[in-house]
View 1 (cartoon, helix red, strand yellow):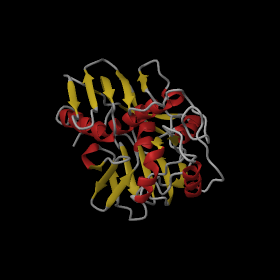
View 2 (view 1 turned 90 degrees about the horizontal axis):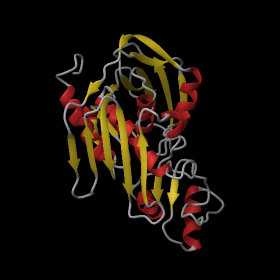
View 3 (view 1 turned 60 degrees about the vertical axis):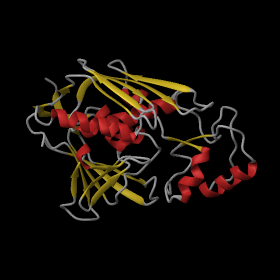
View 4 (view 1 turned 90 degrees about the vertical axis):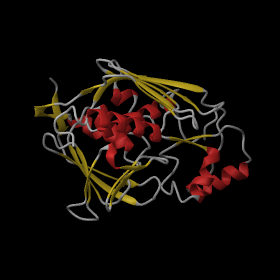
Length: 309
């Protein structure tokens, strides 16, 4: 049986919350066996702690949010994907605001510091749940669909379809041969150009900038619109690249956007509370359907694995 693991060091991250725009200090620390992942809101008090499990998911609009009493944690999916992808079981996350910092829009900043030191093996077996029967859900309104089949390991086949000429129908896969740290973790969040102004007007993405998101521009836009966006982001100028993206970045992978959706699945599925084995087939997935499936799995295993409350 595999052993549980925690991190070796104490790691501090500072950055803006994507939606609040507030500067955040977050510290990751090793935790004992069977601790799981917990968040502590240091700005509220020593007892302001919440377990990172799907029981506490309240909203999934533009990110996943946990809430228990006065303790609220949002946009935690990239950090949680890191723990899931690296097979880290026990961590205490101390944070002085409600929103996890967006950093570069991927999990790469976490990977770089944690993998530099490696992990600490612990003296307890790792709990892993085996999916016993087919799980399937389709959201008729959005067309999102996830199927999970029993298997002896964890894998994901994922396709995205935003009816986009730029993205097309992108595909991404994770299996035992995939290196999560190299192939999935660096993939950044993305947004369509036409969504930006409504998001600003709805008091969201206050911390968004051109260093933490891929901006997709479906069609040529007037230069005055690009200039207005440049002003919002505080940059000198912007252009639409021929490939259909704002010209401020280079893609890390041709299918970086579908790989980022796979990263989100890792983050949301970590909220089951323990890893699981199963073959995941996802189409147009998002935080809503991801966390709904995570709750179905957690409900199934609750009575089967000792220690799951």
